[in-house]
Image 1 (spheres, helix red, strand yellow):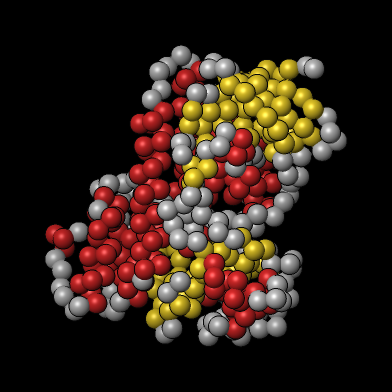
Image 2: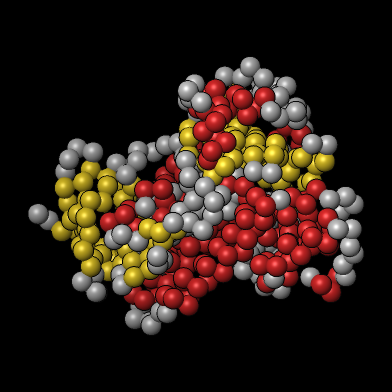
Length: 418
């Protein structure tokens, strides 16, 4: 059997794998990308946050994506009863992009993959990694395509960007339970025939139906809209009953006073997809000869659209470090990769936890709003969770809980407190 020799093997052609490949292609590194699916393919993760724009630009993919005229996302709207809280990315703490996109992921990922292929990147679709061995300096992977053809690939480094496939965590037994409580989601796309004109019709929204139950509405530029419900797993199972996912999603829409008219009697474009107990984690993010990026290492929750951000942040960082290692540099993967990524994960984990405790919702929906607090939270929602000049990043483990307590007890707080 012939053995293909590459410098870096990338598993997965989603956002994480694509930004890694885009960066490395510009460095003239011999890379190969294997992707189990056939593109275009349906996947969740349709709301981006501004931090990802830095990664697409650095990977040389931004111009190709801009040309698609995806729906611009200028902020996010959170709804709870009569109260609406709008976060504007142009009014946030610190520097950074002021906008991003709302995207049908099937189209978005396909555009990135095509752009990489146009630039000469070798992407093998419908090809799965079935086994891998490491001998310290190199790895030997066995892959099989849809026709049953088996080949081997020797690589100096492997970046696992396989997302929900979690290829290396599964093969190397690296999975561990998430620290988040079990939540699930059901979503589909609809023709948004009742979409209001202007900003109202295109704005991404999160409609809070109960402390742990919320509806997402993500409009796309093609006239379609993604609609999904997220809740603790027991509630989702109760919604489903014995009638299935479509009935459950219709019931969730019926619970929304804000959206019931817009999506009443709408037809789903595909059988709603059920993502059950989606939170995931690993015992380690790297090893001798490999790094885990994106959902292959950690997935939290869709409430703040952090999934693609962590995917691209870790993907391009792993590519940079692997490149340096190939040039003979000593790379401290623990400090430069795992510890760095964990800091951002910890911040968003706090925000997800405090969302479901209700503390963060107290800050979002309390009136009157505190503009300074809102700007600092907005920077976190934009994905700038490594900027420790922001006290809502640096003190994430206590500031939300403390402020929520003070607001609920009608106490005042000074600006110096945060």
